Every structure is written in C-alpha cells, then in structure tokens.
Image (cartoon, rainbow, N blue to C red; front, side, top):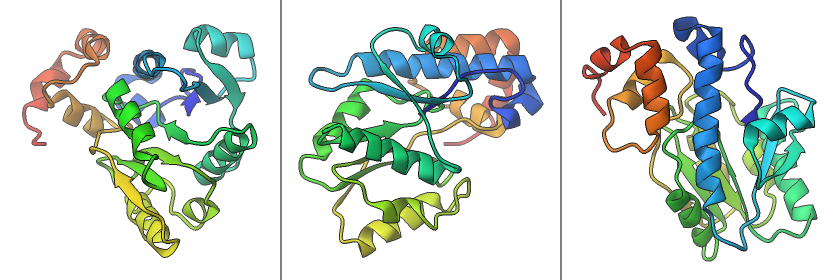
Length: 221
C-alpha cells in the first residue's frame, strides 16, 4: 500500500519538521527500501503495489521499478482501501494475501516470508506498529468485520482489530512490533534503534538534519 510521493501531499506531519520536499524524499526512499525487500520474496509470491496519489501509471511505475503489478487503491478510508485491495486479490484467485505499509523502514523479506508462512496455519496475521496500529495484515479470505467500525489513525486500531478477530473466531499470528514513521518523534525513535537495515534512509536523514542523530540518544526503546 503506497502513495506516490509529492511534496506537500506526502507525510504532512513529518513535513512540519523536515519541510515538504524532504518529507516526500524521505518517504520515497523508505518505500523503495521496502520495494527492494519485496522483490526478494521467492516464487510463487506475486507482488503488487496498490497505489494512490497519482493517476499517471508511467510515473508510478518509474518510481516503484520493475517486478510489480500496479493497481490503484479504492475507498474513502484506510479500512475500505484495505478491504477493497483484499477483495481484488481474492477475486483474482489468490489463496493467501498479505498487505504491508510503505512507511516502516524495518519491514524485511524475512518478515514477509514469516507472514506468508504463518497463513498456512492461521487465519489472520498482524504486524503491530509501535503507535497502536499495524503495518501488515494477512488473510486467506476477506473478513469485512476487521475493517469496519475501526478508529483509523488512532492508537486503538490494533486492539480493536484483535477484538474483532476474536469475536469472529479467527486464529491469529502476531509478528514483531515495528516503528512506522509519521512524525518527527517517530523518526527520532527509529534513529535511536540499532541494527536497522535501511542504511540509505539513515544516511539521507544524516545529510539533511544531522542534529536528529544527536537528539535520538535521548529516546528509549
């Protein structure tokens, strides 16, 4: 699930601190880092990018690079966009589907493989985000109850989803918790972590604002 990066329309909360051009560039690098991890997922995994933010398929394709089917997102809120994306995949005959965010730098092919494998024995896979949401959701058939009546954008998203999964008697597998970066506080928290793989993204931040690395030591994981 990705947004074509455009200054002033991408990562607006982060742009308050970094500036609109830098926030858009930051997101673009972050998403492309995840695209590279997606490419490493072995066959028979088929990779799609559900995009928004542009109607120009050529521009989107140039940004994402080769190896992906490109499909526009459809829906008024995140829940409907997720549900519609799953519906489109299952209608095409796909038996297991995993949707991932594009603003979580530490998403890796290992996590993607773990999510796909977990669907062999579980109904639902969720990747918790540090802010109370989730960065990944996987399932074998569309369960609309997981996408309706959720306070999207709040810290209650994961908990509300867990409750709905339990009420639907769905077996659940939880992945490691990761940081999604929406704000400068999220960025500082991520910079304070050791062992992350997104070196290009870290170097970009160091070049545009090295002081963020100094302030990151004050944050505890």
